[in-house]
Amino acid sequence: MKKRRGPPKDKKTKIPKKYLSGTKGKKRAQLASAIKRIAKLYKEGKTVPKALIKKRVALGKRKKSGTKKR
Image (cartoon, rainbow, N blue to C red):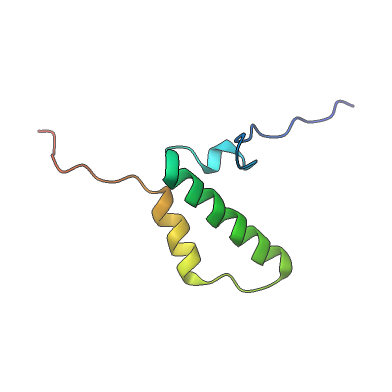
């Protein structure tokens, strides 16, 4: 049986690209570090702070542009 290939990962952070899509530069690095911190806490069996979860969600969201199309 063939071995299954893993998901494509980001070269810098080694996190699957799908979790970092839509972000660039500093924001991407911050999102990656938040994901790593959450994973570490979860693996240790500790509680993940709500603030950390909110930060991860906020970093992954797109900013709304000021103008609307009619």
